[in-house]
Amino acid sequence: MRETEEIRVPAIAFLGEQDGPVERDLKVKLTELFLLEISISRVSLARVHYHDSPVDSVALCLRSDSPPERTLVDKIGKVMRHALGLKSGFPTGYEIRR
Image (cartoon, rainbow, N blue to C red; front, top):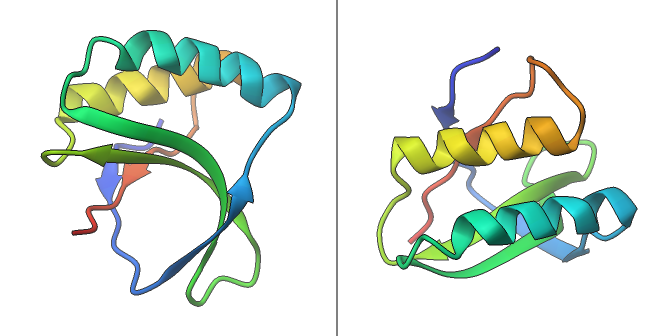
């Protein structure tokens, strides 16, 4: 499994909410995790387009009073791997935008 890494992109375009049966299940599981995190005020699973990427992506977007703690990022990765049925190899990263 790859280590969590901070990523920074010069521009990101939000294309809309990512939704479907798998995504709804993932959202339920992540909501349980985020109920314990008082610093997070908003969460969305969105279709996004990064500046120079030839394809669109899906991103878990968080609004928080402070940068995410490593333990939270690791917990998110674990929930996502479990929800998607992956044992390892799911890259997790985070971007800090102010």
